Image (cartoon, rainbow, N blue to C red; front, side, top):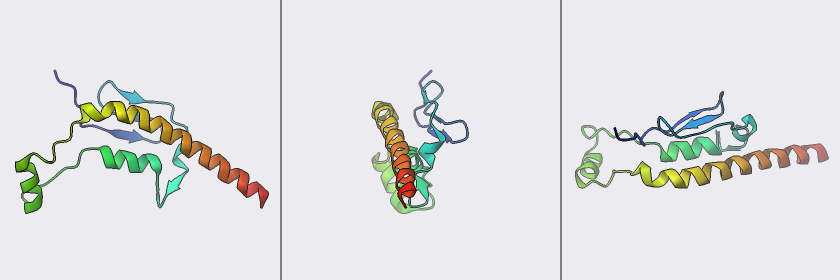
Length: 108
């Protein structure tokens, strides 16, 4: 049975990112979600960017053309390694940034 690399889910309450049935990143500190870029956390932006997009070819001709040409095929198997490197870095930077902001608030 082939692995399903098209599933990427974020559970903030449990601090888990699930990539497929087997691969996950756990123990994400809640503080990592406190650092916001605009209105969303950095992790929210990454997950939203890399999770599969559902296209409705009946709705948009442009999307239908992309599907017919195979341009929307996204090979999650190839980006999995990249995400396993990227996400811990983003978590670390987010936590450190929140800590820096807290220290700056103390100075005021």
